[in-house]
Length: 152
Figure 1 (cartoon, rainbow, N blue to C red):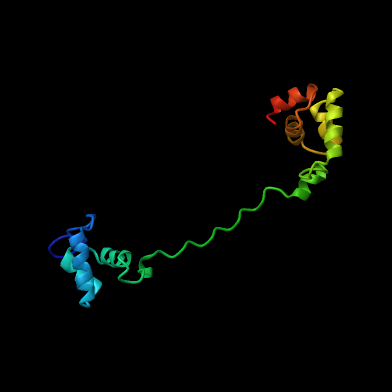
Figure 2: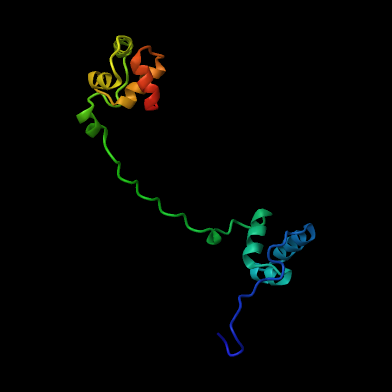
């Protein structure tokens, strides 16, 4: 605060206004005459940053990199909730590719009335994986109804 009251930041009179063609021409002329961005800004009623960026957009000056914020540092990866190895302790085939033989066995067991929980146990996979596979293979049998309810 000064003796005359609180200081207010100075805002150039043309802040936020679009640049006219005449104003761009005047900017180019002043720049060509060797005026620095601060003087040009004062003359045109613009901020120095506005002048520097406009000079760049008109390809009259290099990019004002000192006005570009530094990139944020990359955030660390959050720790994984689990590993595949941990999941395979309970379900030995979790995340493994299905073979054609497993698909055929799954379709056969489903058609013979085996439940979703039993299929998960037999195939060493989560019930969700079994449900999804049954629906993908367009299987027939009671476990398909369970799979649809499961949300597979």
